Image (cartoon, rainbow, N blue to C red; front, top):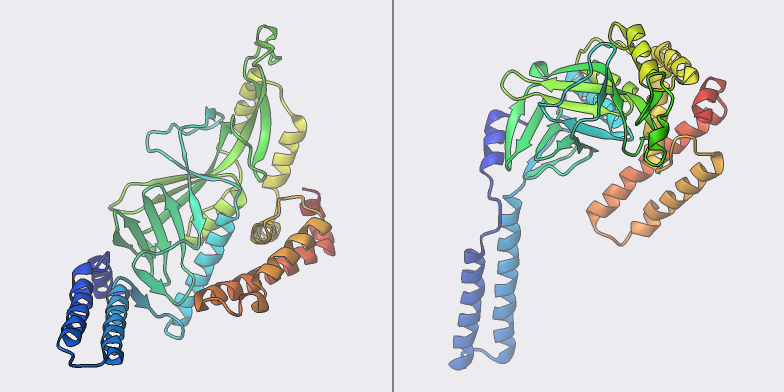
Length: 381
């Protein structure tokens, strides 16, 4: 388990296997074998034994030194009930966040939309959320992380670690503050499947909101998207701001860390709608859909997050039919079936075992929605 002493060992671990000791041992074995052969001390079979022993010694030394590059953390059976429950909650929140179609990191200088405003999408970089490699650490439980550029945050049972420049810094959960809010942006790149489009406008429009006829060739409709915004902050480190296509997943992640959640937009929303009408063509159906989204209960929100996570596990998009889902399941099941990986390395077999559990659970979750009237809207969407 993590402690200050263990973290110090992790940060001081060797980053590469030193070649000099291996060369000394291997070269020594070769020299010894040559001398024995030259003075005819041993027969040829004995010389081969010396060479084989030298090669084996080099291999053992290489593995021993490589093992020092990774510190093992053992959690199974060592976690108290409270820590285990919190870790499970954090993991589920990260799974939901990772199921979002797109997650971006926003620079500190990015201008965010205020009440009733629509902002252009600022310069941003894609973020990965998932079971990411933890350099120098081998844990016996799945460790989820958020990789944003050169900086990563890994979530362990006791707390988080911030990884940057090949160095880990501790981040206790009680010092991690997460805020959630919503913001409207013009989206001129590929639109994620789970994004909430609340309006549309023309790139070039007239005062009444209709398209400007002078720009027929390059004048296209631009969706106005309501994204979820996360702001993670600590007492000593710069804030990390994320823009998430799935607002519900972002809200659940923030609530796991104690944030107060409101799926409604900031105040002055009505004034914002008037501004959108002046900027472009208003979509009444989209606004109605948005209102419906905001009125959804916590139970429905939880179910939609589970369905999004299940679709992500099977690699199918929102709105996939029964046949597409079944075909995806069968393909993955054939790939990770125990008979297919029986002769592969232990870590591959272990990974396939985890994936089989994951895709079975995902398939069961999606099958339940086929027979559940309460998810009719999810099937249609």
